Image 1 (cartoon, rainbow, N blue to C red):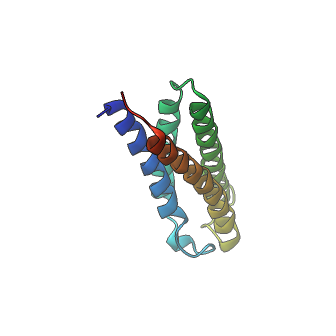
Image 2 (image 1 turned 90 degrees about the horizontal axis):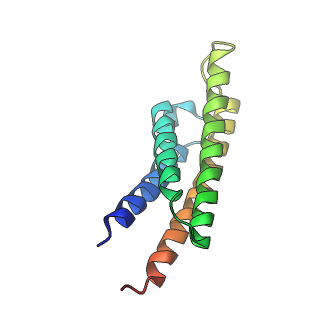
Length: 128
């Protein structure tokens, strides 16, 4: 068993599941979307991105691209959330929640592609 691959797979799957957990719920209901879960999804996604930097294969390049897309979408979601609640100093409303969750859903799609690539790479592995 390759410990590096286990850690890599763990963070890729954890990023996807945290992102899924944040997106799950009514699109416009702020009570269904926790800011700490979004924060955790961003942190784990960034860790997964750093782990993808070492792979110099074509599959590694696509893994990195999907991770960068997910990071960009999640950070944009956090920025929208932060601006919405900080500048007018009001709680998150339905329209802003929809924007935040939509951005996180885009990240979820990128994470899903990354998981599919990980599974495809694992299935095609021939071993030593």
